[in-house]
Image (tube, rainbow, N blue to C red; front, side):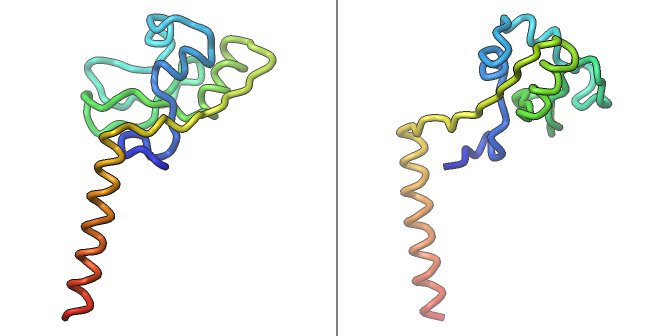
Length: 113
């Protein structure tokens, strides 16, 4: 099931940290970010996050970008990036139930008109 906050199985800081076996601080140092700008131009020497709408959005990284960075910049020869779906939470289950109910109501209303 896709996560609304992460619809394309992008990697957050913790996932990158685990994949590269680096500290959280070093991932932030590697990341191509600037407090004054939301989206910087691509930098082949940095770890480039996905585009964000605002500075409050999470930093998310495409698995291919993490693999490229590990291979080309960190010189890690064997790079395997595996994205695991996040475990379902009680909140997600409730939201899915609400969505299902709303879809049922929508269908019922559609058939009546």
